[in-house]
Image (cartoon, rainbow, N blue to C red; front, side, top):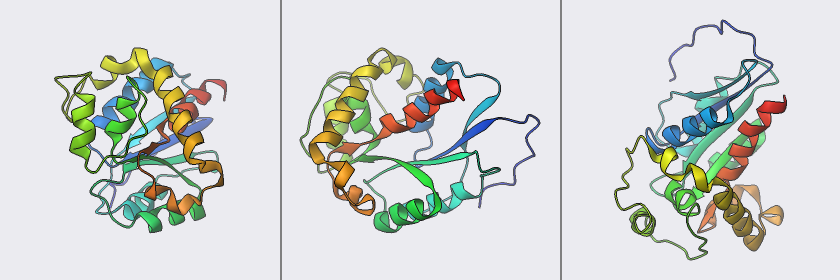
Length: 199
């Protein structure tokens, strides 16, 4: 159960609440991107705390943070080490929760900053091995991860869009995207955050 939140002191025109599976890498990356966007004070992007044991519960957790109809909800998780993917995707779709999903792990999104690959990965450590060819000192708790890759964001976005086009996700059942490997749509979350500039 997430801790009860204090009422917002500021009335935002638009808010995005993001619940991340990872406790370090994903929040560090997204907070870095949020800072880069230099958002107006009238909008808010918040990485929320939660407790969960499955992707489905992660979706359930983030629903509790919605304050108004204008708020946008996102969950960030990957395939590796998670259960109930089908239920998570279907529940998210039914409740208007957006998913930034990576297969087999978030490191695939990070790898796309440096290179494009459509090769599937059996385990997350395989992706990490590929990433360390570009970032030899990489580890999951790296607080400076965004600073290390921020200059390559546009390359990652281009590569992610290329991968989605190749697998034809526009015609793919949303509840079965988790079967794809490799795959990521983290670029869509970045686009949503960046769009707050014009809200």
